[in-house]
Image 1 (cartoon, rainbow over the protein chains, first blue to last red):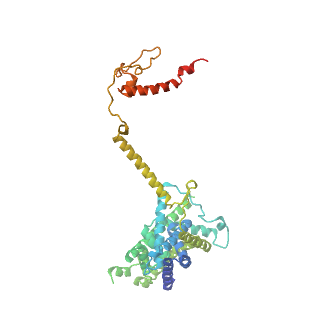
Image 2 (image 1 turned 90 degrees about the vertical axis):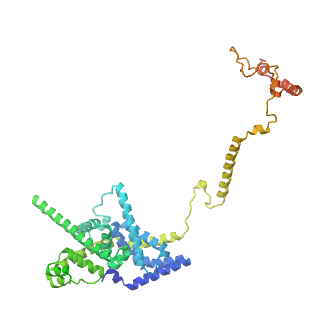
Image 3 (image 1 turned 45 degrees about the vertical axis):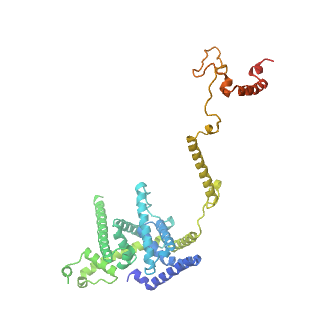
Length: 222
Length: 214
């Protein structure tokens, strides 16, 4: 059972009911109540939205802004929300479009500005690196390396394949849900998912093989 | 059974087939159903490794994203969203520059604009009319110059320059008197006005009187 299915229909119904209620309150001019009711929806979708935005943007600050923008935009455009479409789908579309816009803007920016090299410990604070009850430093390094490789491989996928893969595999959406989110046919979603996995497998295996070969070479020369 | 499926049933599965099986299962939300996989233990083991690899990717990606957004950060984010929603409902304030501080929607601005436009239009019309009509001609009583009598050209000649040759304009006749030049040819009018002017001339101090040493 996928994650979205596990979320269950009652949640969807509750979402739709809450969205309709907020819409009605907005129309009546009871804005404080509308905001209060909308806070429920925010709390319910925030975590998932942050995850999706982070997968797209690979930067927590930018993902944070993207989520905020999407939730504010959804609230201010709630009048155009149609009840027959699940709120989750409608909102996720807004979020994904926002993320794609940010990626485009970033690409344009990077054409003109040279970005600073990332610190070896990413954005984590020094206190995070202090030995604690978490995984060992070696595990942390290996895990980070693995994630970087995966992120690099994902970045090499075409945009649609990447979207379909992330929504299907990371968020557990079915092809029908991905189809609703991306506007692609269900059969096209399946094809993109298949291609994305095949390409990722090739990229990550090649990468692993080349790094292993490099290690062998280093051992021979030393 | 299709040809592809029959071929698949007789040979071991590769990564492409695994990807196909897995993506079909994920897309439909149903478990994998493949006859070869059900029959071949070797392929089943390889498929299990393949799904484990994909699960590893999932766990890494989701773990990283969850790590980037701990509950405290999500709470801050929610508070920020609520603040933004509240700000959205407040009308936007226009902060004017102090020197020109005045309400942006006042009707005074419109009136001023109309006055300025009317003044500019009046100026333009006045200039255009001035080009077509010479106003001085309209208000002047005599439009044609009278015949010039040939008397007393004393004032018409330029003052003699000191030490230089005197230059007399060719167009001015030396025989025309100043009185005739100013007042036309009417002798009675000339004598009346001259008497007035002379009495004024008598009481006006001369420059030579002022320069005289005391």
